[in-house]
Image (tube, rainbow, N blue to C red):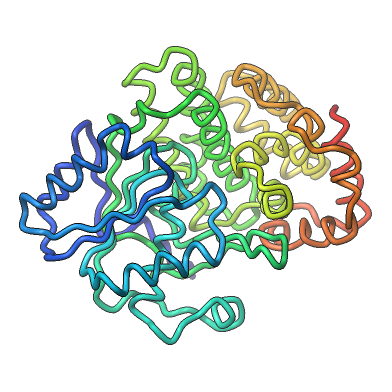
Length: 380
């Protein structure tokens, strides 16, 4: 038996759908966001106006960085407890939404902290706080998943905490908000979504529902991500926004694989963007996994969905898409020097074997991981 969870109460789509906030039954709204993009674009002002017109008092907490760490969560939580909200609205990329997930849970359960979050089973539901997620980037799918990825600086590792209590009640997919994305963010978050879809599809835990979502998301992203990157049309941004959400729904019920294990370890050590690292890792990981005939067959199915033939053709298509999106082909091109990679290399290998790598369809030894990392550094 398997229990499928497809998001929270509802997924709201359509241009201008942030107006749905006006129907929230709440009196105090705590808004969590990232850097300055949502403020300078006027999105935060719009959200506050909608909430205030509905009778909500608002408080904006910004500054969540691209790889939110435990301290960022605790700092936001302190402000949240001082304000005492009954609804939390997270708007921005995956980082502020992930941070807000943990803030929301710790707010409802004051006895929780990061020490017990790593070792004990987390509560399965929030107590009272309403939670709304409004993604401004198109990649993480975090608005519908039970995962929150937080950087533990002392471990040099990003850890995915998981519980259904992290799933927002409402996910609002308003494509108008995505028009503010810089080109590199479009590329990197889009490849994050593709990595979700592909790793889900080849995961041995994939079921009929997640497989259909993952395959559809893969085909949709191959069709629309280059258009979103090159032409920046509202139609293409909306398509990618929807497909990345489908990929999130898929992997949340299945799991991922080694690309994510590697990107979490490299992101924790080098503070590079998660989507960028996934994009670099994906072709190398697929080449390793394709040695398994079942995986190669699944890659051939994905290839057919994008008009190609064979597993190797799909891997080639991923490389081609990376080139179209100006994604570096290696860790060296991304700015990681040999000296930086080699510093505590054994520790990096160990971290790469944790997390999602444990669900990889083909087992990986420490020696094999070391070779994969070296290959990723020098390039194919």
